[in-house]
Amino acid sequence: MALGALLLAIIIYYFSTTESSDPPPTNDPFLLDNPVETTQQTAELEQDPPQPETVIVDVKGAVAQPGVYPFTTEQRVIDAIAQAGGYTEAADTKQINAAKRLQDEMIIYVPQIGEEAMDLSMPSFPSTQEATTPQVNINTADEAALTTIPGVGPAKAKAIISYREQQGAYQTIEDIKNVSGIGEKTFDKLSEYITVK
Image (cartoon, rainbow, N blue to C red):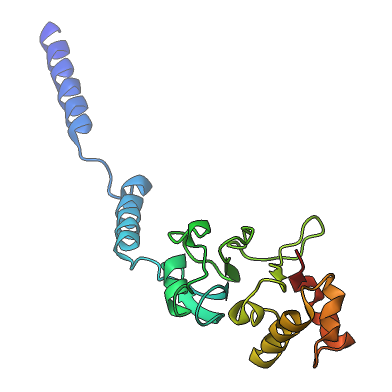
């Protein structure tokens, strides 16, 4: 009787240890999912880095060739200045953050020496709180600065300078209507871009 109980205990022990040492079933969803996740993560790491986007930037003020130019988001303000022909001799470069990255719809305005700084380096959107339009002093601006005013080309810029040399400084911005070629309609378009000081 004792021998039979001993044999039964040995048989139970044998089967219990055999079952616990069996490998886990291959249909375990956790084991099946892991290789897929690992493959996906590896594929994501192997993807190409994002390409820089194309942006359009408006360069104004004391630069040789003001205008609208295409760049990429990897480029900086100094690249835009160079594309616009570089600074003029009258440019106040101390007011420009040349290291700033470019953004779409960005306005870069380079002031002249003595001109008040304006932060137009961010994309411009209409604002009811403050004006974001750079104003040109028609009493002191040279031909290059005057041509940055919408609607004013080289001929009108020369006429504006000629008038103030002959008649004296402009007292109000409305006085610019006395210049040949600048009527009421033209004045309405450029009035927000000019000032007298």
